[in-house]
Image 1 (cartoon, protein in one colour):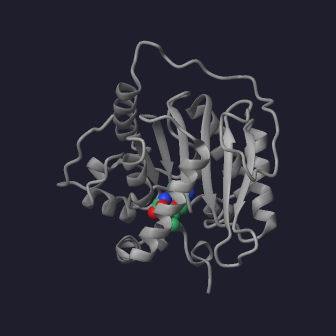
Image 2 (cartoon, protein in one colour):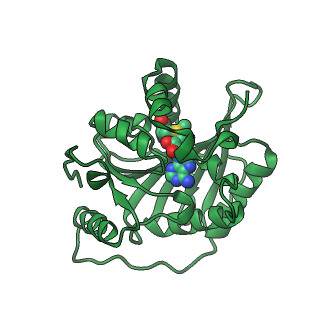
Length: 267
Ligand SMILES: C[S@@+](CC[C@H](N)C(=O)[O-])C[C@H]1O[C@@H](n2cnc3c(N)ncnc32)[C@H](O)[C@@H]1O
């Protein structure tokens, strides 16, 4: 069976029809929920964290963030159709139409943690002329690092095509300054083998994240971090950011992309 990543760019592959099919499949709902739970288990987060869900799709991963630990989340995805389904399902997160390969469009230190379930392998494909996977991976991890508070944690479950893709993802994460490594569940099973990239924006200690099974570790080398403004709450910041991006036309907040559908600001 061909991989979705090689069939079409994500915003084309996840069309209206495919997004609805994906979201209504009880098999997919079950798999995505259990992988999100595993990602949260690996991160060992306290409740009520501000979390970014990268490649949030229709909200199957995000809704676990709301249910487990009552986290406050923002989701970004490149597919308007997936986000449209998320809106229809009235998910709890604030939703952003954005390409992770162009960078995480949030101010430094915005999030306590980030998760990504079944999405970052898309960055390994050049799905448009001139797209350079290496550069997109670098931009993704560099800006993800910046968007996290110091010590912020990341769990990305992903489906690498081969070892070369895993290596390029790990390399980009390391170069951005993350420490952490790879957890492989069900390593011997061809069908159920799962890869989780577990990272910390800073030096990882054993008590920080559940590192059982982690294969590599590396101390952080990047030392420059921008200091976030103290006079603005994250809630206010995200609302302002949405407004600015909407005005610039860089990013379409879904309130305007899907006119007629109401969205409450949750942050
Ligand atoms: C298999 S779905 C997973 C969705 C959700 N995380 C879940 O668990 O159900 C992968 C998602 O990654 C998104 N995606 C792929 N490439 C992306 C990119 N460059 N930027 C943002 N989202 C992307 C796709 O649009 C799709 O919604």
